[in-house]
Image (cartoon, rainbow, N blue to C red; front, side, top):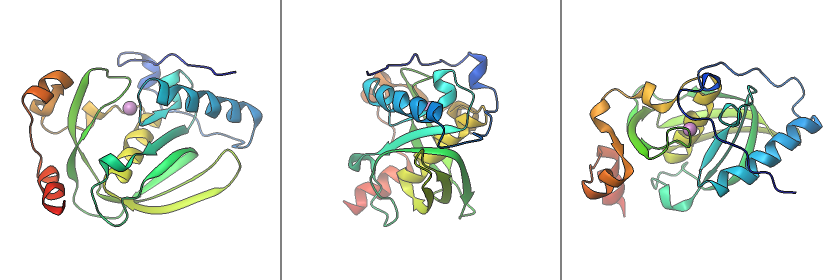
Length: 188
Ligand code: NI
């Protein structure tokens, strides 16, 4: 049976809390949570979802990387829906880079958020498989966004220029090009 979970929105305290590590990543209740998150995220139009967004304070995220958002960098690889338990991130660059993000918990808006362009991330799948990868570009951005949820951080808190927090409709009417957008266009 398919379960669509309710999404917590900005202002709900669970989104500000630090989530608990999962003691047993292969436990049946974690498998069930992941299945429900994987049912929910595509249904509500998300590219990622973290457990606190469905009112569960555990360190679990699911995400996908669609080919349409890739930056063209070699380690920015597409990814089918993947669940990560107790994920960790290690930045592999000094500088951060601005890119657009939205969030199911902050509906209707997008913002330009500084993130590490290259990271190493690690975690476990619900099958107990170890994931250990170096990625860049949009793939790296999605993972950083989702893992921030586990530490009670929403993307507007990462923003350095709140003039770049936009309603999606207005962003479509009055497009703003970031340096990374120009770089991607030049590469096409
Ligand atoms: Ni989010």
